[in-house]
Image 1 (tube, rainbow, N blue to C red):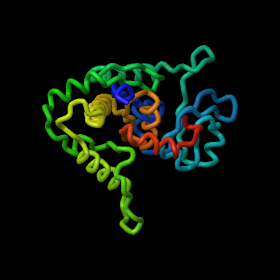
Image 2 (image 1 turned 45 degrees about the vertical axis):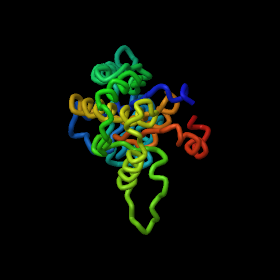
Image 3 (image 1 turned 135 degrees about the vertical axis):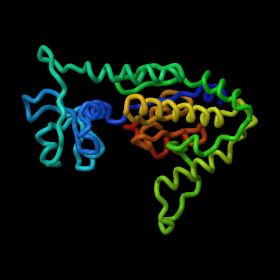
Image 4 (image 1 turned 180 degrees about the horizontal axis):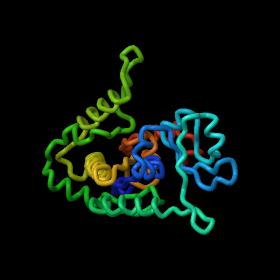
Amino acid sequence: MEAATARVVALVDMDCFYVQVEQRLRPELRKKPVVVAQYKTWKGGGIIAVSYEARAFGVSRNMFANDAKKLCADLQIARVREAHGKADLSKYREASVEVMEIMSRFAVVERASIDEVYIDLSDSVRKRIQEMAGRIIPEEALKSTFVHGYPHLQPTEEQNTTKEDLRRLGVQHWLDSLHFGDLRSPELQLTVGAIIVEEMRAAVEEETTFQCSAGISHNKILAKLSCGLNKPNRQTILPQSSVPALFSQLPIGKM
């Protein structure tokens, strides 16, 4: 068990990254149903990125742009440049480099794709915990964080509890359970890792306008799985104690 919880690893995924790159270039596209398509010789081209506004109409990746227009008449289509008959992804790659440079200030990063990065937070977490010297972590330090499996008791439907209410309640219960004097506590290490990722994501948005989601756990697979639990622009801690419950509910296809 000690070996399984020895590291703190995050997976950061840029939300609809190609769409965000296009929206930064054309601010009028923000908060609108937008897709990014490449090659338009067949049915308007294939869609490779979809904004959350467009997803609400049933538009999805790998759909053809002309078919997507039938689902959403107001759909805005941004097109990938072509060079020598091939898709030119240079502006997305350059934007990705911007993000990676910012993230690398906080911890060791490993690019997983143009819009995903794994981060080994282990050393940064240990250093931060020593600097904290046992101080209590305020709830405000985890303002966009969910803790999977918390709160343990879900409110009833009659209580009209929102997802944000549940998030805050879960964070409160999680923080109440921590032993701040135990510097080797895996739960404390995950929490400090989440604080660092909160700071990292805020820096990315401030300097590039790009928003991202993240998962924080003890290895790459768990970080990847937890990243997708509360998108967009949110992050999720997956503690070891919550892994069995997650796996019992997770379709095998997700693995």
